[in-house]
Length: 275
Image 1 (cartoon, one colour):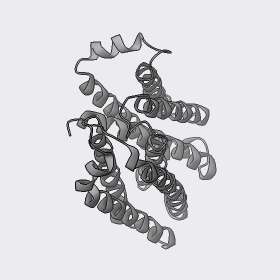
Image 2 (cartoon, helix red, strand yellow; image 1 turned 180 degrees about the horizontal axis):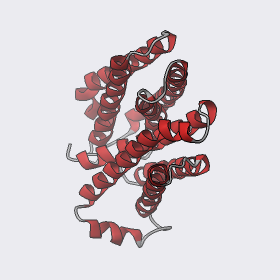
Image 3 (cartoon, rainbow, N blue to C red; image 1 turned 180 degrees about the vertical axis):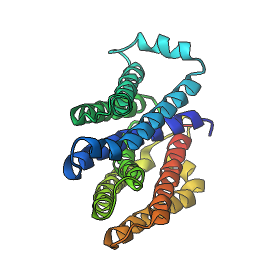
Image 4 (cartoon, rainbow, N blue to C red; image 1 turned 30 degrees about the horizontal axis):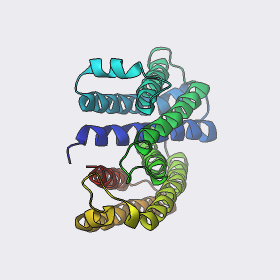
């Protein structure tokens, strides 16, 4: 499997999208405006913007040279890959502007946060569509959308909650973790639905090499099972934190690591299917 750059790109961008939407939600739900909002949101917004930039570098490494991205932009409106590159650029620019306002002007703009997140959701759609229109039958399935949106809703909220852990205090951070737990359940449910649909379809799929996808996935069945065990373990940690009256930093960061590993394994198998 040689698509490591794409693996980073397709995890970092959805995670950043889910993260900024979660921050917007928490900002509106639990945080007073003004100085308190700046204190809580500044660092998380900066980290989200940096994560989005990391995803951009992943895309550039896949293309080989940045000039290739400029060439791809010319197909905007005609090619899903071109649409993905353009919308990704817009999302990253908005994320950086949102973080920049927090640093330079000491201002949190909830409307801009929401717009950034919504552009990110469009970006995820473009990202998934770039795979569903290919000749790789294992990707040309509705499950591809469930995979990418599932990452945003499962990994994004725990990322946001872990970034808030140092700035939110007392009952506020515990409520944020409860919301992260709720959204992560939704994200995992989305992935499970897509997986169930895909498993019913997989016997009919033939990969580029001509073998059936079901046959090609046999060596990775253990990895797929371990991936779900790790993701559920992360969810259990979130559930435990949701029931506690005191934050355990080690547990929340462990939950984040579990989700990152699980999503990485999921994406690895996704690219193996298309190799």
